[in-house]
Length: 250
Length: 248
Ligand SMILES: Nc1ncnc2c1ncn2[C@@H]1O[C@H](COP(=O)(O)OP(=O)(O)O)[C@@H](O)[C@H]1O
Ligand SMILES: [Mg+2]
View (cartoon, rainbow over the protein chains, first blue to last red):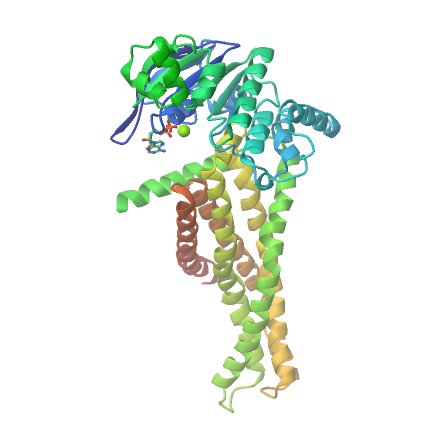
């Protein structure tokens, strides 16, 4: 469980996050939704400690990691798998080396054990036969999948995905959503997904927080989203024509 | 302006403190060390070799034409070429060239990793990204660059000899005896030390600039250019300081 309390973050004069408080449960797909520039990436990076909040706390199962010394922070981070917005695969390594990278550091496995585990992870995300390719030779969707495989390589307790399906075609997009959803259930991870894709929201949004100009204006799940009273969220939903039709037919 | 200078300097030393942490695994460190040595030093060999050969040749012609006085022994041409090479060219000039080549390589590599979140990805795995990425570069460049000085010295003298052999500027025997005249090993040490020092500066400054690059591809280019400019200025400043300390 990840608990956020009264989180504030600004860059100079610009206040990006304002008083965010929310809880993320284990084993479900928690979502942060909102328009571009609403502060989703900043919120995720603050949660995982890549950015320091101005005030407020983030606790992982009751433990506040922001105050930890660097060595312990590093140890804790091994339990967090992250998929970055643009995949952030290492250009200097092949697909399979990317997935093996965390294993090289944190396990004493033999090379064949590492390869076996990496192949298993790649199979889970449906990337087969591209082990020797470099990230630059892959399509965007493939890169995201390899990114997921790398994130789950060491069975993390927490999975953080920044826009896992932006820039993908609808079909691949759904596949990736279902993949993340399935892995979350199977391994009991606490997953936070950051998206503005209405499809994903309706497909796998178990616990949704709507971010608008740095404020968390609404919280609920994919079933209650159409009953919202929040006019900003209403606008956000109606930007998608299918969702608008559902909204109007209710 | 002055405030910015002090902030940057402070951040640079804080950065060095993170870089010089014990590597997570020595095996991975050594693997990276040899990869970087190949990428940064071995790949500079041809460039340094070509430049040294030509400069050696040019120095012979220039020195000879400046010493047309018949009272000066022609042997002194060889002597002076040797001294110019080892004292200044093989370390400082080669360092300035490497500042361009190695500096831009390091800054742009780290910069592009920064803006595409690869550095954050390493950090989020629980790995000290600065130490993993930067330490092998700094150490391999600092430890191995003196070999480039020796190479450059040797090839510079060779370049001079080729000119002497193929033209009739001075007798070849005079050139060779000049090369041996009153040779001081201390100068070789001085030159190698200077080079190691400059290489440390080049690699840490460009790594610092690249590591904290911001502002997209444009920002990467900017940090790369800046690191070269800063390195070059500091090389010349420290050339003066080190020379004063070591030779006088
Ligand atoms: N490193 C930064 N420095 C200054 N401003 C930033 C930085 N990162 C993000 N911002 C600002 O924060 C706001 C939210 O950005 P972001 O979280 O990336 O939005 P999104 O919801 O699209 O992920 C934007 O207005 C952006 O300009
Ligand atoms: Mg974003």
